[in-house]
Amino acid sequence: MDVDNISPSKAKSFACEICQRSFSRLHRLQSHLRSHRNKKIVKQNKSSVKEEEPDSPPVAEEKEQVNENFDDSTDNISDKKEDPPCDQSSRVTCVCDVCNKTFSSKCFLKRHYLIHTKEKPYICDFCGKGFAQKGNLNVHYHTHTNLKEFSCYICGKSFAQLGSLKAHLLIHSKIMPYVCDVCNKGFTSKCFLDRHYLIHTGEKPHVCKFCNKGFAQLGNLNVHLQTHSKEKSFECRICEKSFSRQCLMEKHYVTHFEVS
Image (cartoon, rainbow, N blue to C red; front, side):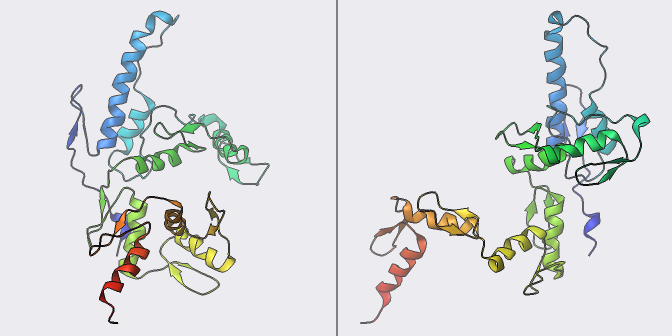
């Protein structure tokens, strides 16, 4: 199974009503529309600026035009802040004095330093979460949209990111490249393996804010939080008695069928 050749439809079905340019993906059209809005804002504020430079195509649009026919999980979504352009004349071997990682240019090294300084200049417009790399912000944006344009051709399940689809396809192919070195259990992605490791380490990073009880899995914490809630949203279908947790309701439900 060649998961590397999976890509969404190349049909350009999203057209700009201002300049009639077409795009194959909705978020690219949305990004393009921002450029029209930005030009309008600049024109309105022109009187407050001493000297305006001649209009030039936005950097984001140039990148979009070049990469339009390629799959990229870090497509340009936000024009709020761009990575600084790299000067070709600065292409030398640069070494990070913190971790000794090498880079081909000074600008890449400067961008890398943000990891060590914990600076996060790229901010999500929706939730305010910050990121050190613009690519990570673009990936994060998918959590705020309902766009799931990558579909599994086997079971039809859809995903917002190509990487998520590739990881999903490994389930169908029975390939488990990430193996636990403690129990040899295999997983399709590193995040699942990392989550599994908590079973062996005994670590419980998810803590209840009411009673400080810890849980290895976030889902288990969410279930536990229902015990602190006064809301009883799980109702017995026979006697209409309500419970705060589904498992308690189900335990009660079977008592109606017990033979005395």
